[in-house]
Length: 417
Image (cartoon, rainbow, N blue to C red; front, side):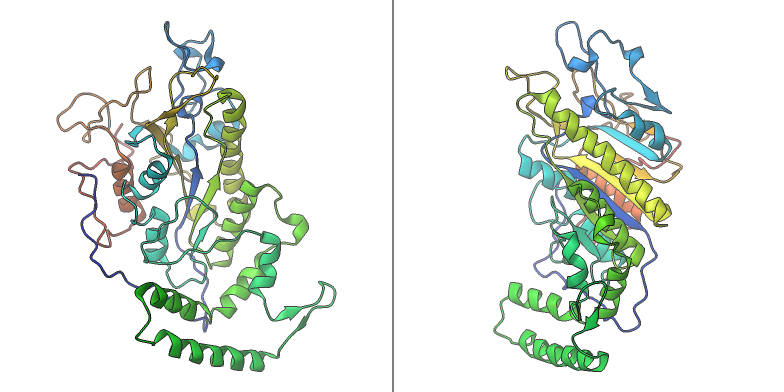
């Protein structure tokens, strides 16, 4: 019931355009922020106060439901410096609560959250987006960690050391910033690239190559000529002193710079520190603070670089944390979690869809009203429902990876919920 229709045994190789006549990409953009480890949504976007019998959150001691802060139509927890994020961006934010990840296992949770499928081997939403929107770009899909399955539709690029990226993107340049020179002339460099491509063409045509080897050679062969595009990317990367030192912020920075250069259309940003089985409050607080900080930085930097109007951001995690503390003051795994979906001043924003009870159990949602009203066809939300709606909203086809969900939820209809 949660599966895709068969995609067949053969998947297409990525078709990457050559650099000649490179035109920067100016279409829609996508970023996922993956809070790996299992975030506590009851201390973030699905705030829970304590009950008479259970302490769900220490920060909620003495509070009633009326005490919870609210930004526009979105309630949030007064914890981990969340206020700035919600107060600034509620008009660009859709919160979907009560999503059943159907697992307490990290690997399965990440797979389910970011592909809509519990089985491995199916593409992330980011991979589908990059494949359909701009597969010809040299670094169409940037991944900094987390779930990045491509199902061989496209390849992802990973950047670990931003400070060295410029040298990788401009391999023909040597010397210090004050005295830059080229190893080869432009004509000699073109001759070298042509000779390399001819050699690679012969290698990739070898009929004895295994499918995985052939895929790797195809990817390498078609990526090699993107010199002009990569030089353009290098030109927008700031000096070392202006590169963010924070790992999370540098990921967001590089994604935005790829967007600005027109060489990237999708990126995954990975955050960690959420698996808080002990000392939950003291560990989850900085982890959730990093979520808010990264989201705010991403939007601010995207605005400064002129790409914010084209950007969609999706925030999620493996699953959530239990609605109670364990004997080590920690919280264990809990399958009912949330998504944040953001787009600048979207008509469907400033809304909360999906409901959980006081103990963070998911309530069935009516697909006709997007309310937990017990109407016919009501169902518990699963990641496939979010992915199906996102594909429609982002203009993505199924590519042979159809979901088999019997109901559709139009989360992006501002008149529902």
